[in-house]
Amino acid sequence: MCGRFSLGADAKTLAAQFNLFDGASWTPRYNIAPTQEVLVVVQDPATVRRQARRYRWGLIPAWAKDPAIGNQLINAQAETAAVKPAFRAAFRKRRCLILADGFYEWKQENGHKQPYCIRLRDGRPFAFAGLWERWEGPEGKAIDSCTILTASPNELLRPLHHRMAVILPSSEYGRWLDPRIQDPETLQPLLQPYPADEMRAYPVSTLVNNPANDSPGCLEPLGRD
Image (cartoon, rainbow, N blue to C red; front, side):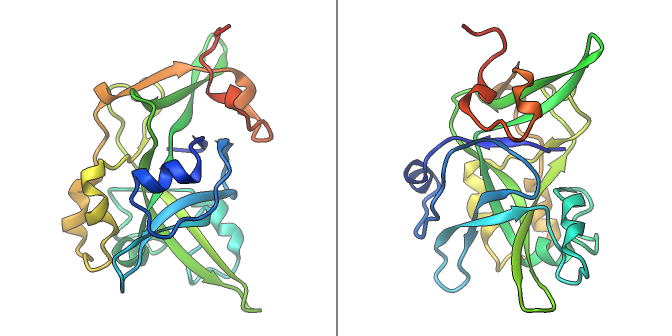
């Protein structure tokens, strides 16, 4: 699964890397938690241009009576999202990139849970495969929300957790975002574990355990001077 991640890059850097025509303001974050805003990329169906948006993390299905259901839907299994009632419409029509530059997992070690940070080896930002949905409340209040797809872990993540967030290769951003593609069989091959040799994992301070702690120190390797 993915329950906490970081995005320390600024909006200008992200706009250049992800070819954004319309960008959203973004303050670097180092300990993003469920229900908080995350930075996503969607594709405008009319112009085919990529746009950055800020959505709530935790997908609220359009049919939900209570938006609190989104707190339980921060992740969706890649193997079944195309058929699950909460995700199947979004899988076909509302896919997005959820931007990050690291994420955290916890491993049981010596009687306590040790947090680890997982990043790409070169440290650059990357994109989780995401789905998004718009929920409208009885008083017309609209909430745009999203979920991160997960798959079986690669060799690096397997000792840490039985699932891992799907990181898309940059060559597949266009296909994942294209709203004209709605066939799950065309999209399913994209949802694979990212190559382990292109990633690294290292222990970090328990500072990250508290979502209120949101500083670059969350990313620092444990024991670094």
